[in-house]
Image 1 (cartoon, rainbow, N blue to C red):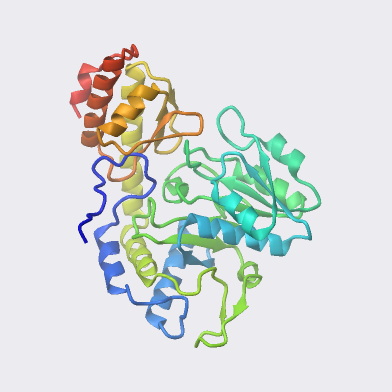
Image 2: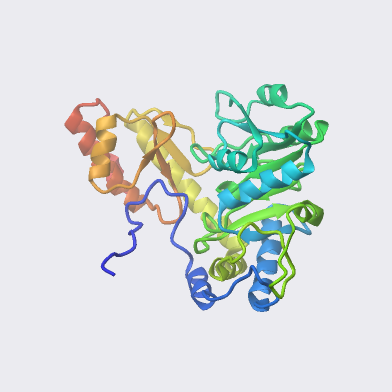
Length: 365
């Protein structure tokens, strides 16, 4: 094989980051194990129990049910599936327009009507718009705690109240924000509101190896609706979506959670938040229109010609739906890396004459 893995040196828009060394080592040790058959692979099953317990601590839940999924898409799909089984015929699920595209996949696969509410001017779920879409057939309401494009946090307690009034479940998608939000003042988790299910991904800011998503439920009974018989396995039932699952992902999640929760993640939050704030300030001084970073995601308007030139320079950057260049300040995105990016941004902006000025102080990073 003549290909090499993508270097993360210039990857600025990915929500994933290189795994922590303890996560990498654990993943390699458990490559051949299958937590989908816990009776045959009891050691990785015990690691999954540890990982779920710690994810419960992260998300404010003392006795969590759940499992380590392949990622946020699977966890969100399973949450919609739980809501559908909880609901009625012709069930609908209400999401904000900022919700991840995985909910559209889930609705299509599960035959659930998806109702999309507009967001407010700050990119958070508009409560009045959600309330207008909720009715007697609503099985689930979705809140996002750290939107993919801007890192916005929806008003989770208020959305939980709307769901409860309708007899629906509330799902919180904290795939990205789940490892940053515990160290903020946001109300987002099981302890803050009547949350029923939640997505939290260790393979994002949790720094586990891919694949390691997380699905949490307030009660075991919520998962029981997913149960299928598995007559030819030692374990006779499953609630997971895949049969065979990655022991590597489970073990890496358990190892890194043991290593970093809570103090390591607290320090990481401080570093990436400082980096995002510094970058937003540098862009603002250059005259760019910067979306105020709520979590560690920075988005700003940039000329299409400049964007394409930066891609040609090897920067792995992406745009939001509204066209801003979006930078996710994960642990691998340092001020040194961003200083190089800003130098290239200055040069390319000057080349096309956008009027954005270079910042001579950017080199002191």
